[in-house]
Length: 233
Length: 326
Ligand SMILES: Nc1ncnc2c1ncn2[C@@H]1O[C@H](COP(=O)(O)OP(=O)(O)O)[C@@H](O)[C@H]1O
Ligand SMILES: [Mg+2]
View 1 (spheres, chains in turn cyan, green):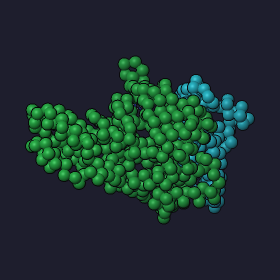
View 2 (cartoon, rainbow over the protein chains, first blue to last red; view 1 turned 180 degrees about the vertical axis):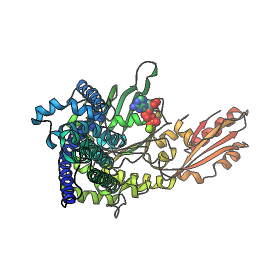
View 3 (cartoon, chains in turn yellow, red; view 1 turned 180 degrees about the horizontal axis):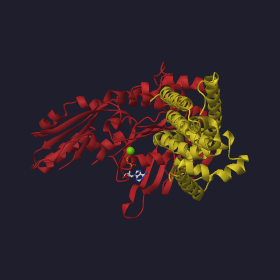
């Protein structure tokens, strides 16, 4: 039990929570970067490699396009269906291989990214599917290359949906990061677990909870705001 | 300019297969406005989409401005498409881009520089009557304005062919007229060849030099509009001048088609006086076809065969198109 009457109690609490928040930002920030990079690619490929899609013939090969589509679909489904806590344990050997340890904020990036990619990929897929095929045809009729259509039509038109997907993903990653934190990944989850639970401090527990609620609110509102501002429909 | 020869295309296979195009042959001259009319499902969209290879035919050839489209692919096809603009029923504008940026897309694709894009975009927007709307978003425009943006985008890269897939079908009659007049004006000013498809007869009446009637993936008739109107049993003629059922009567029935200046002559009165026939009028319709008053009248001509034949010959000698329907 932490001594609440210690004159440094509140400043310690603040320091600890802020440090935890810093670690969470680091973990979530980098995970988000990789998630967006790979999730965007995966989501776009999921839609475009379908039969009749823009990239149904990938590098001139229909078989490759089909294979990529099937594999991505299965992988994304698996990634979405394995509960995060199990995925995390499952990935311990892989994480160790990649970053040398499975403890700490850097190690936490690995399971977060692996869980984030399929999550974001599905949201990207949904956003891209909403772009009317007529727009793609119009660009084709102008003689646009596939890359131009992908970037200037499909992704550009899906930007509002992508912004919403991004904020939903950030919120999801923050949640996951607390779970990783509780098992040695550092961050706010770690603070809540070690101080709030193991050392019975409701102040630490509530401090973390309040901060998490605030973070989620902020990111979701940012996403909604961005989506509204970016949409000219 | 456009020459389609024996083009066939089917969708699906087995018992559910649809023959969308069945040996279509069509020829559109340079600078001509050519309309293909037909009901929904006739294969019109499929046909127009083979012209710029959005759809590849199963067999046959499509030649545009000397280039065989069916064998092109990759960079060559994209290059050829720069010469063929296309507009759509639902406009297909990018909602994320302003009007100017939508037009500039066309020029980004052809590789024009920033300054050149801007200059050309503003110039063509002026041409379609949209100056002042450059920085608006499509969602802020009316249907007619959206189609003007569509036209500007299609023509920004200076194509010699414009394809129109039901471009006015989502517009009200007045806006339709304005857009059609714009297309006609641009065609004349820029020497543009226009191939348009539509299910609306009004479109053909207003701007088409030539037309084709399509049904079940086949072209049933085609040619210059005036010529089709002066052709017996022309489907286009029947569609433009619906006369209804042929009534039960022992008398002969003839359809007379008037065009332009001839409309003001007292044809029927003369006919009655000269041949002693009690002419009955069964129906009449007048249309403005490409600015020319054109009408068709269905007459009942009682009398013996010789009298009727003489009357018909007389009418024909006056330069009228006479079709004996019964
Ligand atoms: N992509 C497609 N797949 C299957 N059938 C199609 C496809 N496109 C058109 N069709 C069929 O081909 C026929 C002609 O269609 P279309 O060219 O769109 O006609 P129109 O434009 O005259 O209405 C219709 O029976 C339609 O159902
Ligand atoms: Mg159609």
